[in-house]
Image 1 (cartoon, rainbow, N blue to C red):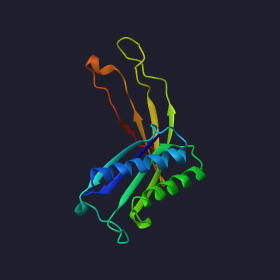
Image 2 (cartoon, rainbow, N blue to C red):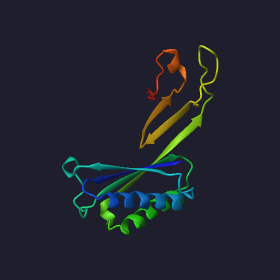
Image 3 (tube, rainbow, N blue to C red):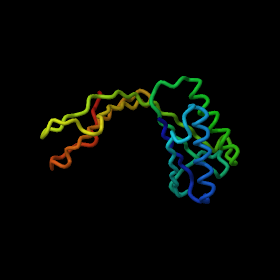
Length: 163
């Protein structure tokens, strides 16, 4: 599983935006050796007056954030960086135009929660995802159940303070 968010300055044509997303997809598919339909790519535009960019960019600026489950080797992560830079260079982005951030998520699957009224398992498995950013650790404890039909409030996201 890989998710990529591409943030760009507004003003690109629809074709340019599509080319950027397809280039990011090709880079991730090659680096991660996953099927072409695996990486989910989304593009977010920001008005230029809403972004302060490094002075070295050429007028085209992009931040690419790749989120994936941990376990990829350092070599694979280097391929991600290299492939993204090479693909975007083909579209006219210079080295100073692109910032790439890769996030590793630790995940473990938990037993599904039982619905209190009938004891049946919920249709969606609970999952605990821990995001590690530098020294900070925050855990997001997701609770998905089919309890919504019972009228009780079901938390969708609980932030657990790890200290």
